[in-house]
Length: 354
Image (cartoon, rainbow, N blue to C red; front, side):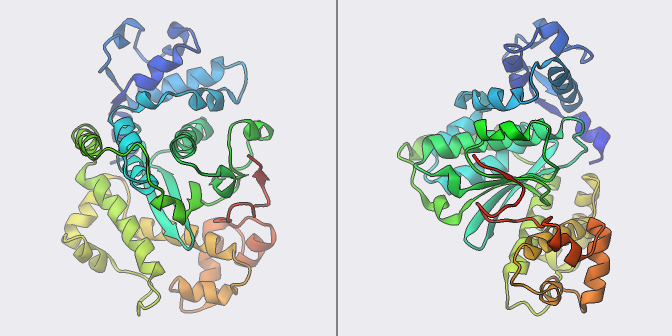
C-alpha cells in the first residue's frame, strides 16, 4: 500500500470532533472539504488525508506548542471506541497492551504498532507507514500518552520505572515534557516506544470481566480488524524479533522462504502482501537490523565484533559499512556520541524526567 492509498483510508472523525472543543470548527476543518455539520453523525468517517490537514491546522492555531500533550492527557477512555471496552476489561496489563497494539492502528491506519519483549523489558513500538512531518511529534506522542494514561490509571504501577523513546531530536518544547510524561523521555532513539518492565504485563486488572473482555475483542475484530497485508507485516516483524532472540539458531538472518513458511504462505504471496504496503522483505530486514544495532550498541559491555556476529554479519567490517549506511557514522562514533537507542529506564543521556 503506497502513501496515496494510505491517505485515502478512512478513519473515525472522533478525535477531530473532540478538537473542536479547543479550536473554531471552521478554522480547524479549513481545506478538508468538511464542515461542522458534516460531522454531526457519530459514526462519520473521514480520510487520513483530511485528518492530517486538520492536525496541521490545529498546530497552526494552537497558542502553545505543547497543547496536544495537555489535550491528549484529557482524552476520556470512551473516546477510543471498542478499544476502550477491551482495555478496561482486559485480564492483565499485558492483554490490554496487546489489544491496543493490535487494534488501535484501525483508528490511525498510517501507523503500525508492535510489542516486543527485550530482556527484562517490554517495548510497545509505533512505526509510521508514511511521512508524518511536519506533525510527527503530535502523531507519535498522542498514542504514547494514551498508553501512559491506561497503564497509570488502571494499574498500580510506578511510571518512573518506564521510559519513552522518541526517534527524533528534542522538540523546542522538550523542557515542558515533565509536565505530561510520568516517565523519562529519551530523544534521538531508533524507535518510538513506551518501554516498561516486562513483569508489569502480568499485573491483574481488578476490573476484569470475561464477558465484557470477549465482547470488546469481538467488536474490535469487526470494526478494526487488520487486513491480510497489515497482518503479514506484523507477523514478519514478530518473527524477526523471535529469531534474533533465539541463541540456538544456526543461521542469524532468517530468509524470506523461512519466514513465509512459518506464516504458512508461499514466498510469492508474502512478497505480494508486503508490496501492497509499499515495502519488501529486504527493507523490513534492513530496518530491523538498523534498529537492533542501535539497541545493542547501548550496551557498552558488548564489543562491536560481538554485535556484528549477533546480527549475522560475517565480519565487523561489513557490519561497519552497513551501520554507516544506516546512521551516517561508524558504530564506534555512534556509541561515543551517546546516540544509541534502547536505553533502559533512567539511563538515557538525552532525557526529560517525568
